[in-house]
Image (cartoon, rainbow, N blue to C red; front, side, top):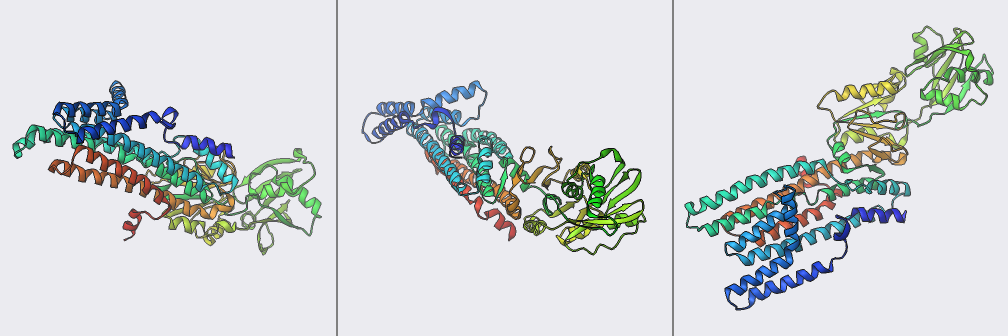
Length: 546
């Protein structure tokens, strides 16, 4: 397990390769650049010497940015932060603001290192959050963390696209400032270009999306602490937007593997009854059939079975040795005109065996409710998913009683595996529905639901896995998903709000280029530190409730 932790720690680092190692050269460069900048700032020397000192400071601090900028141009990424910083710093020198141009690169380089440091420390804190959890949960979670894209949110792409659009609009605004300010007031082109450069610096998209992966990882970690392990943060985002939850009764609300409680027969001895019952149930995939066949020891004589057919959610009918046999619930027997005793058994479901039209006895199958899941439907509704649907394999009457006792309003009985998938497809045909399917067994493929959540051990096709003993935490995990998205939006709004203020200050002349970059990077760090509040109620949620 410790080796897995180390692998995850390596993957959780915000970068890879040489840039993750202690960079002594970087700090030596920064120290030299700061010293040269300070000398130029405080020494009384000719202007040309000032400019040379600023230029050398700029080159020492930012030659790697220049290389990145060239690569961005070659890759036709004309809005890359490194390219914008280089353009603004060089332009600042050309219009006589050499000190601001050099200071911009220093602030940017040191600020980016601070952003990376905060990101790295925050990710290590997330790793510490999971250390005390159950070993099974730890292993599952850490395996998911080995995926570098685990924390990525689809929302980030939308926000980044919006930031890119705003950047383009801002470039137009900056050009407008250059040409219009001299006509609107007593401004020189030097001043108007300076303010336009400030606007360009402010509108780099970095601070808007800096904390998005950290928000996603925090959400995944906090959810894993509750025993609910999501494959990716993108799955949590889909869950946050879900408006329909479909539950499979088997293994979620009832026992995963029902048991045969008792056998009652006045006509046959127990061995003979079980022989008939087990042969009747042999080809069935219904839960009661698994319980009956599991309790039968002797070998089967399959050649005596013929004309087998399932009665969805209610039993089976077939011929054994040429004799018609029905092995089903009371309502199903009544529908076929077969006389059987009333089902007065408590704590289980009776399945009646009728051979050649004559009642031969009953098998009582356990049908107890999983106590951990008793309040699950109500909890999911309270978490914001208002429509909850229950699918069962039992008959409609039994399903209705069972579902209503658990708080379901929409219940569908007699659903075998194929019918469950058909019902999911039907629900998702409505384009407004985003469905979460919660099940325990029976499927070895992904359903048509937006998110498949499995209760149990297998994870191959599920988007999230819940420990059986932690199924009651599922509503809280849904709330974590919603808080995670609220937090990502809060961070984006904070960053955009800071940028809007800085643009106003730039246009009115109450800022400088390096100060604008400093505040923007401070906003990026603030959003990172704010990400840990996924574990608390978000500000957006508070506003919505009011």
